Length: 342
Image 1 (cartoon, one colour):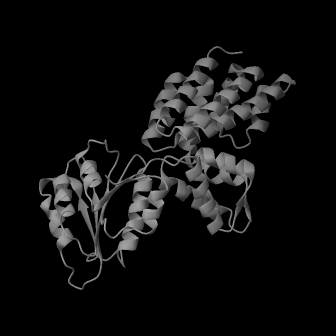
Image 2 (cartoon, rainbow, N blue to C red):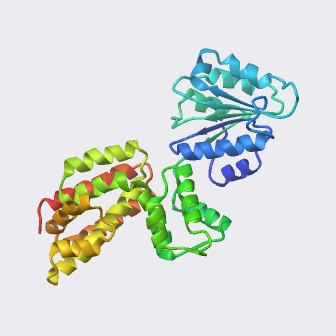
Image 3 (tube, one colour):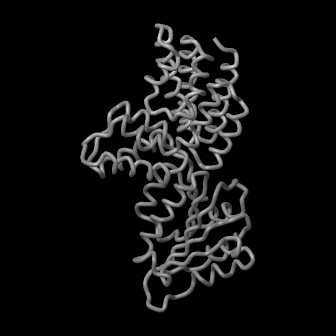
């Protein structure tokens, strides 16, 4: 049984074993599956864009005739050289093709199979794990250590440092999908190019704002006490691929700003003036919701909300699979709390 874990995965990807040319990449992180597949194709052929060197196949089509995979893998290219076959697995099984391939002598051909989440009893996963010439690699969402390494890698490549508060905020905004995280980091490093250091303002301007349109209705609904809006908008955000950590970060930022405005109101500043001075980038369409939130919560209750959100944000980072559930539960709790007022 060959199912790689941890450092063994990095070692294999850096120097793929020629004796195991059949590679299954599967898991919840579609971005990580694609990134690893791209790397394996790049190291397998001289030109990934050459149709004679790189062949793409659909798993559901192969299910009707698994022997096509064997025939393609055994084909000798007209002009010689190495080849790669990239298969996108679907809902139908072509495991019999893997069984036949595993018993065949493949020469200069690597088969990379991309799949979503697969149960241990999945025919495709079982076929790859039991074959001596195959390897199965799970691709799950990045944990804190993985994100820190990814962040350092991109910053180092751009000759940039990052301020401690910016790093902490950025960690909360990344995760869930490796390629999405890497893309956000590259946008950030491009934005901060030539400055020497990434600041919290940079993170807020580039990464946080990327999903503002999806997140604002969720956060506003929570602090306004509109549980139905939270449920509806949160579902939309999940369908759109928004990382729950981003929503938690936005809620934490909103709670902190509301707390500051609440202190100003306690000192005699009118609520509308406190909102205008405390929420500098607030769109006019959100002003009513923010003022309602300020009426709903006292300073003491906002302090408690800030503490609750901090715990929930940490749990989202630690438990990737349960992240959406944890985030939604925390926001619904705020909505219920807001209806009590005071």
